[in-house]
Image (tube, rainbow, N blue to C red; front, side, top):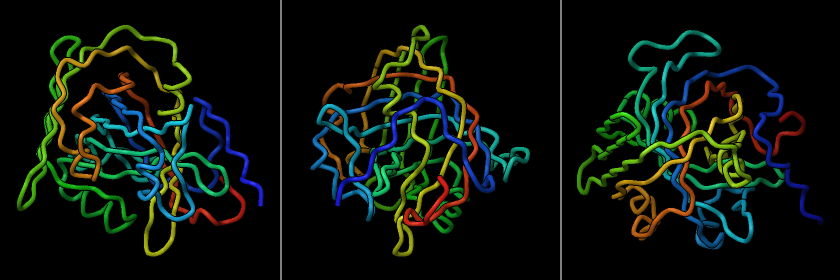
Length: 251
């Protein structure tokens, strides 16, 4: 059987059918990525998905940011609970129907109830952490430390944000992702997203000391400089309800 045609990379989200589950602002994102052999992460893909690659490599992403104004459907943001800090470690996937996506190895946040809700409802690997985000002019500092018994991995990232730039093909490959692939109760689900094209800025890493990638089974990456660095002031996003990747029709 021939492999499915993989959808093209596009900075503009395709139409999203079905009801909106939630809306959320994603602000002050730093994108740090390391190129790796797809074979290194193939076993981390849910059933029906494989690593998505470009020029023979795939990427591991470390992305700290602020989630702001989370609301149900298209409703207003929920006070306190709807705004939080997050750092995610993620991989890039393509499913058996050729749809590109993201696979999260971890999503760390400083809102405990969000951890419980996302794990219970969708099987997303959220973890509770103490976190901070500080801004001093054009310098952004992100700190995270897991709250748990035993070892508590930490992450410290400092970047200087530069001028806005035209998005590169690699920027789009890594950020123009319109679904999440997740394994839940014996099925692989995809959760759609939609937002405006990312505004992208140059960024310079001033400090990087991360243990979150290693805690997700990827030791050693943070010991070398990332292969891709970018910053975005953010976008406003809508997310759809989870669907089985094998469900016919729809996006």
